[in-house]
Each structure stands twice: as C-alpha cells, then as structure tokens.
Length: 346
Image (cartoon, rainbow, N blue to C red; front, top):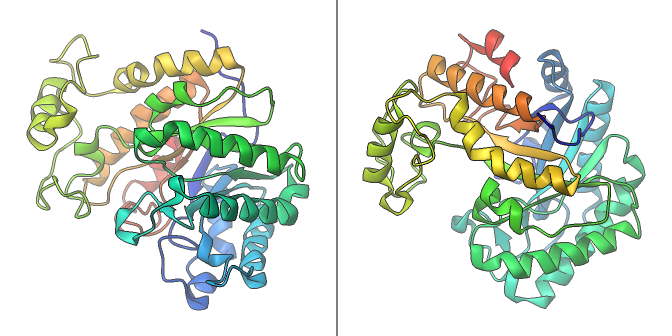
C-alpha cells in the first residue's frame, strides 16, 4: 500500500496545552506549568516533537504592541525542546477575533480585514523571530476553524498568510487545517500548494461519545454519561443517535455492525482523505487526538492502540492531547496505571 510522504522528525508527539493557551495568562503559569524536565520526560516516552499551543495574548498587548517576554517564553520552549532532541510546532491556538471556543467571546475574524491584517502581522513577527530555526521549528497557522461556511474565506486568508511568511521564512514547515475543528473530512477542501513545506493537518476525537464522555463543555453530553471502549458499532451508533441526532449515520461506513470498535474504524474514516493527500504529494499530520480522563484508563489504552495502528499503517505523524491537565492529561494520576504501556502507542 502506498504511504503518505513522510514528515521526518514529527512522527510521534505530545501537546503542551494549558501552558501558553487556554490558561491563566500569568507569569506564574508561564514559568511553572511546564518545566525543562517535562521535555526530558516526553523525550523519554519516545517522542520526537511537541506541539505548543499559543494564544495571541502571550505576544500582543491590547494596544497592538508586541510583548518581548512572550517571544522569550517561546524561545525558551524551543531551547528546551532542542536540548532534549525534540522538534516543536508553534500552534496559534487563538487569534485576535477567533477561537474554536465560543466561550472566549472572540469573534469577527473571518469578516474583518482589520483582524486579518493583525493575523498576518503576527505571523510575520513569529516568522522573523523563529523562521531561521526551520530545522526544528514548524508553524501552524490557526487551530480548529469551526464553521464550514468559513471555508472559502479561510482558504483565502491562509493562502495570503503563507505568502507573507514565505518572504521571511522560505522553507519553514507550515501546517494548515480545515473546518469542523480540523476535521479529516475538511482536508479535501483545503487548497493545493506548489510548496514542498506545506503539511495537511487534522484532529481526531472519534467516536466522540467515547473520547468526550461526560464532558461538561458539550451541551448535549450528560455529565454522568460513561461508555466503555469495547462496544459494537451498533451499540455506538445507538448511543450516538440518542446524544447527537444530527450526527446520524456516523457508523454507516462499517459493514459489520456487530463487530467491536477497532482499527478498521479509523482506517475507514481516514482512508479516502489519505489518498487525496498522497495524490497531492504532501504529509498528513494529526495535531490532536486523545481521550478524556473520565474514561476508564484501560479502555483509553485500547483506543490509543487502535488509532496508533492506523497512524502507523498510513504513515501519519501525530501529537496526543495533552501532556498535563486539560481534562486529557497523560502525565498524572489518571493514566499512571497504564502510561508505561500507553506511551508505546502514542
């Protein structure tokens, strides 16, 4: 079977959510949430990179001026990565006017030329600071575009942004993802580029009733809902329709509904989009995947085994969500009973 183009140095990674993004924007958090020994632990897990989510407030003051200490914090993370043999992705998790999380109140980005110009300017500054480090630093333009209606506007914005970055950082790897929160289904609608350093990016938290069971931030999800991994596709489908009726048919692709969830589910989900990216001659990367810490840890291990086998089969690089906290933390008490085995399946 033909595999995807390899993205060397970014095969197996972990996210550092909660450090410079989705966090208390304080010096105490910036200094202490993640330390240098955490990078050593991640390297010890067999990882070759980390993905670093960043909110724009780390780098930009309310008056639009740039924050030197914010860039210094990122440089420190880059240095700690390099010291431990890890590459790093700088992921703009929140931009001025846009976040995947509506609760932040960030809005207007896709309809405002002013906000888009701020976005381009920020990326030019990031490229000026870190573009010379292209051997071990990659850029991810924006985390999880939500609405499909943004597709055309986002494709225009990302194309302009790439052009501006290329004038400063001609060979830096740049990751792009699409609508529905970087859904694999959106990959086909991303632009094609005559650029060897573009990476197609998606996220995977499927099936949502397993990976987000009991999640308090999903309005349709009962907080006491629990669902073990080893159910049949028929049972998954039944519960899925109850909770998310708009997502009916999510398991229609599975020919044997009596079979239990496993690797073949992810193969079916990814397969046609892998073929598209192969034809475009680009790597495909999964920037987030993981299981909420309300799920049974041993069940989560089985989910990691299944999705890992699919990543390996197709040659998809990836970074698990997330290293510490964030309701998904791999480091800590919840995963302690299985982490020694689980790290083999990141």
